[in-house]
Image 1 (cartoon, rainbow, N blue to C red):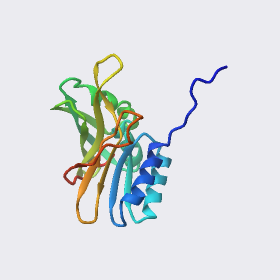
Image 2: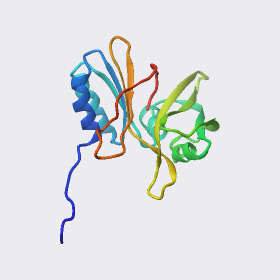
Image 3: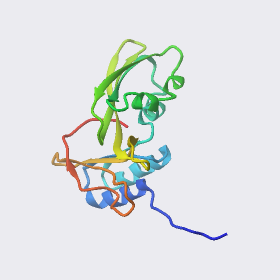
Length: 201
């Protein structure tokens, strides 16, 4: 058998750690959304913590489902109301991506959905959750869902999950980097200014 191509690529989670452990300083923070499992993401957080960098690595794949799996298992909930992005071109996009969320919850947890119309573009969308505990206490949570608006192989516009990095320095400056889709380009494009935000993956 003839080998047509043999190559290897550095995992994005490892590339991010390698880059930002030298770019950022002790006391800075980093939020990243990657397509790696929980163990790899936790290891990345621990590695950056050794440099004094407070990092959170979230799942870019089905971020809402992973939030429920990783954050809510021990929480006694009565209800979850979810406001989800409904882009004009694909209004069901983020609702379908939430499958199989309903099956992960206890039968006594009431689950409701509410679409929120929005534009279709490359951006960090959010699910907005209202969590109601069994004692009636409520909490509002935003779960980030980065997506890239792009043309596919048949020249059709698609909205697809993508990686995303956001970092803040000790003096309060916050920046974001968007993923590049070409292997010939750097892992991330030039930093873009953004306002500070509080999100979870």
